Image (tube, rainbow over all chains, first blue to last red; front, side, top):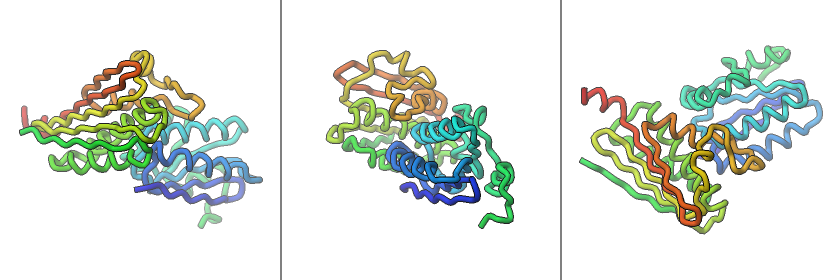
Length: 121
Length: 146
């Protein structure tokens, strides 16, 4: 199963919704697409929705860390949400949540970043 | 009874998912838990990715060999390449170490393998290749043994 990525913008927040499996093969394409979206005017913060991500390995961690550093360097925030138990195991093991924030769903993430949840659709 | 399968495939990144899915299908015969299956898929992905990126430096016309065996509820995985080998295994195993920082690698591959499996043995010789052998006893079968 490959990876599908859906990008959306809500005010100053880039929503990245991942669906499928994120490994080394998919990592480069994702990084390039993601960086392009980040370069869009007006995008500051990032929400990564992991609800439909069924698999991820350390190549995926590399992409997450890379984007986190880029967002952080500009003084902005990156928040993860809706993680599955399978993917969570890898994040827990590698200590990712010591640096990245995780919330239950997109609505909570938008609220945390100051975007009114009634605007999401 | 020992049940074994071997897979040999070209060193292209598309085959990382093939390796994971094949091993998952093979191992499913002994009913692993969801967590165990995820662990096994993850370590296969890590080892095969290492072979392709580090062993063969992304040369896409080499071969990666994978053997998976089930013996009394224990899973044995052997992933082998005939690539450039690892100069210093102890350094390579350190968490967050990567020989390719410019490629946005997390440096967590061996740490993940060691955490998700019971045992990980790395044999490597510069210019000859690398073999990673990993074992994991499944919990359901471990409980039956007691």
